Length: 398
Image (cartoon, rainbow, N blue to C red; front, side, top):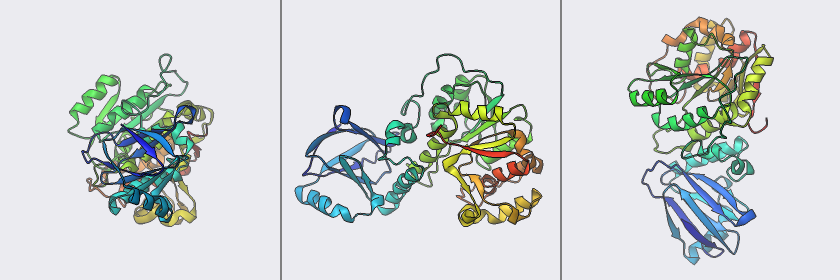
């Protein structure tokens, strides 16, 4: 669908509320070498008002289903003159286009949070990084971006490598399939999931016949299944393991792009950026003291972050510290938000010894304060206690 934008009329674009599968509106404006591309995550109920900065230009829209309304001259003039009073967090500024974000506050806040987080990660929607790496918004696979095809079979390495994936949301398998199929190095795939996922398991087996698939209780989200593997010795044979999971963060909404932003940037930094998997494995091969390698932009560390880091988890973190043989004040904040990382299983020996996998509560939908949240914040401390080093990786700066 195409709109002929001009300087005199603004256009209001709204999700049509159909709840379709496509969660992103793709934009293209300008011609030839001057063409620009944009990607707008969609939250039902949120409206966008488009203002052209050129006398005329064509805007092509695809992806998410939307309705389009041309505003009259009065409303368009008010937006052009009054737009300067709108808070910056509700505005996307491109070279030839301004986009204002409106709609009910509760839904608008969700979208703005995702946009602000992209900015915090150094990949603003309006920036060149997103144009170069649209997968950070679109993801990978049939509805996203294709990873570069391998010229042959995955390359063998001297290190034995595993990817451990916990998947609860079956609809995210196509994205993970695309990621895993495109990886350049040989690896063993270990998948954990919950009961009543027979169709998902059959699909995974068809795509990766040699994968190890474990059905686990729906407790502890991605953390408990990983601990089960660790405690049972399933990871002992590996020099390095990439722990990933299907972070989605819906929090009651049909569409919440916040979890997608997190998941895709984590996967980008750990596996999908060109050269990042090879670089990660090479670092474990060369440095036998390396215990944990996590995404730089998700690392939260330092005493000054304590209030933000511990939140409702302070008591549980303190209890875990004591069980690890450390006074609570000896454990300073240092963790990779999202609990996705590369790790040397030997570096988690102190955690393995605690046998925590049976201590998780049944899933209660908590956003914070459960054992899995406390463990997310203590993986790095465990690695340090074991005498190993922690390093960072950033897929945008390899």
